[in-house]
Image 1 (cartoon, rainbow, N blue to C red):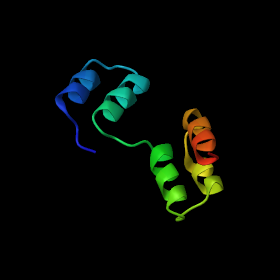
Image 2: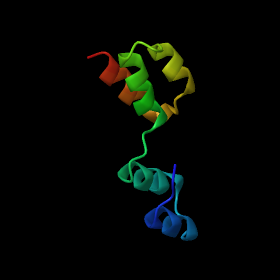
Image 3: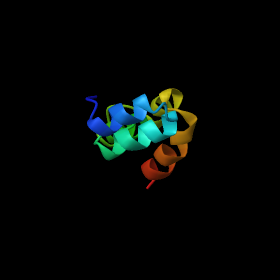
Image 4: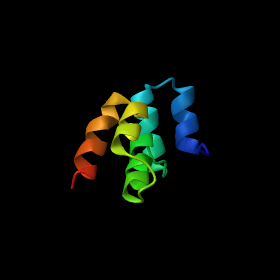
Amino acid sequence: MDTNAEIRQLILQNVSSDLLRAAAVRGGMRTLAEDGRRLIQDGLTTIDEILSVSPSNEVSAVSSSSSS
């Protein structure tokens, strides 16, 4: 992931990881769960595999979006 000016500023301001993550997502970063959802849809992995490696705050997003 490339850092942009916003992310560099946030790092210098010593902001929380949640704020850094939000800025990165705005800048185009896909979360591990989002990329996992794509891999599930492409038939390349299972939901169990993604849930085993995704942070707990992303788990509900994968579970609910993959079951539809």
